[in-house]
Length: 180
Image 1: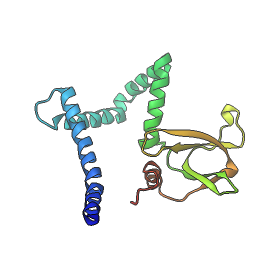
Image 2: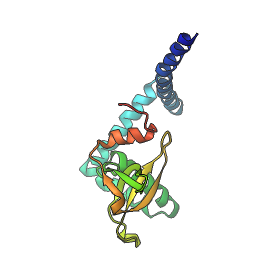
Image 3: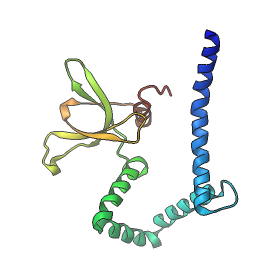
Image 4: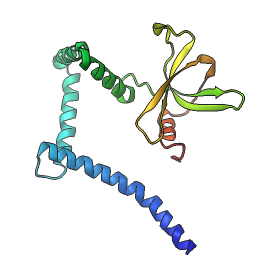
């Protein structure tokens, strides 16, 4: 009986991540197909990828760059829209833009006596502009969640890490259980 339960658990360890991943991919395909009302399964996903690529080409093109900048300036000036638009734009740029923000993993010493530390990403070296001297901003992503906390810490509590930022993010988001 013990051997059967071990096989069952191994089966779960293999199947759960596989099935959940496939289901999420399937769900994205079906959702996009429904939104675009296309009869061919998966065609909505292809159309979406092509559309995003064309918009990226247009945004990079010299002739349309002024139009992109105009739209950006308009959205950045509208009272409520500005808050939402700039926050989302900054978040997307933090992961895929030219100014990636989560590329400096650090350890933050919480308690020197017990050597308690947390892992995060240094996002701002200086907070002088908001009146906080000798401190920096560190983002602490949460495990199994698309959220996190921004903490302000003294520079002396920061230990830079030479690890790959992607590996550090995977370690944090997985709650420390990710092996690769």
